[in-house]
Length: 608
Ligand code: G6P
Image 1 (cartoon, rainbow, N blue to C red):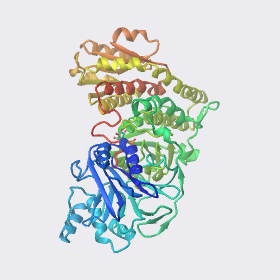
Image 2 (image 1 turned 45 degrees about the vertical axis):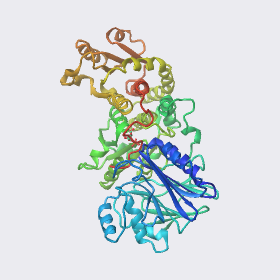
Image 3 (image 1 turned 180 degrees about the vertical axis):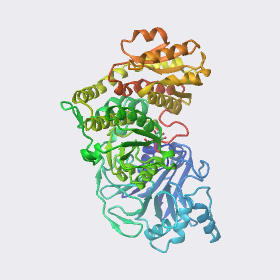
Image 4 (image 1 turned 60 degrees about the horizontal axis):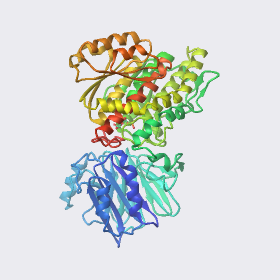
């Protein structure tokens, strides 16, 4: 979704801003723009399309200004176009703003401002902010922004500059993240830390309804009620190299190859093999509080939701606690029952997904203890939850989530272990689980050695336009995630069903043009799954199986097999997902798709 980068210092702002925007490309966007103080005024350029188009348009412009703001837009109000791209300006082009979020009452404000003589040129909601600040401006920019923001409803991460204040940029947030990067003699502002790490590791996260005045050598933060705030400076714990592609062709490929590391990093320091126990410190719960939990609700979207569905099996089996997994977007508008003893986990890679955040806030409002399973350190869900755990997967740049999924599954397995050992789980089961978990990264490496084989398989199947993904028990959510991945990045129609559900309708679609990917490791359901596979075969369906090493029988029944090493049933998803991620990746490459930035998608969906 939309991205923001701002700079104020002594270096030329243009290359810093363009480089920052490129680092935000992964979020998904359709147009980009930049505004720089130059020759006592604000110079502006914005273009529909990729940042390269904007760069091209800027080639002849020798701007040397040292203060500027920039933006990548993902259209909500008004089609993608150069005119609708940010920054937006006021009538006199003295004010420029970039905005993430949605101004819900923009039409009322716009009509009122038009009556007052303001001239609007875009279809966006964001443009009202520039005009509203113009209306409220009487010499004090910070006050004008503050006053304007008291009149808007909705969400905003905003950065503002004014040609009368060449040494100042103002930023503010409500519901859309803003982070200030603190340099020496220079400061930055951005919508996430990715564009900042090549300049500084010291950052300050704004809270909702806060405004910051930023100059080259200082920043001050105030609440919208004018109270000064003193935030702790946080250190980003990863480096620029973590956000680079290295020798890989795509970020997604690199991130799939990091799935083993993701498991390791989510587990590191959190399990004690000898005692067969786990400890996620950030939950902020005593053992007694954990024993008193009667029900767990998991809320999440997309891939994180499917991780939650895997977690449901793990926690119910190991900890004997009932779990419900909800789409966050549905949970927030239902009348969810939160009784004493219910705790709510929000799972989110970015920690900024609007639906997940709103659902978590709703759960909190209803009295639930809310906990986050989050990757992005300092993100809103991490900060607004009552506790939780980071998965420490490092930056995930590919829009389609992969290594974060592995990290989320690991955190959920640890959670199941922690709750389980406080209840009925025996020490021997606990030890076995820890031992198997520790072995998972190596087993993932083993699966990754089949990369070429999986690539060839994807190429062979790239002629098909429809796929079923089927799994049973804990591998049913893996079928869901496998199908989602294929849809997301290759644009191939894929549907997932519980294995046995196929015969209740969907089997009508099976013929030799509708292949099935079946997740059938040697687990408790193996025999039953084989019967279901026979039903597909009897209808000429082509089948790719994800099966356990050594299973020779399966290769006689299905068309192709990808083997995974054995592990405990409830940890199998950590392995079965890897070939499915690779399968989707290679299929998308074969079909010439934009793997890291698939059409219509955004990495972090910060609107409803
Ligand atoms: C978007 C992304 C998905 C992701 C989902 C949830 O739709 O395209 O890949 O799974 O958001 O994101 P989160 O950051 O909350 O895990």
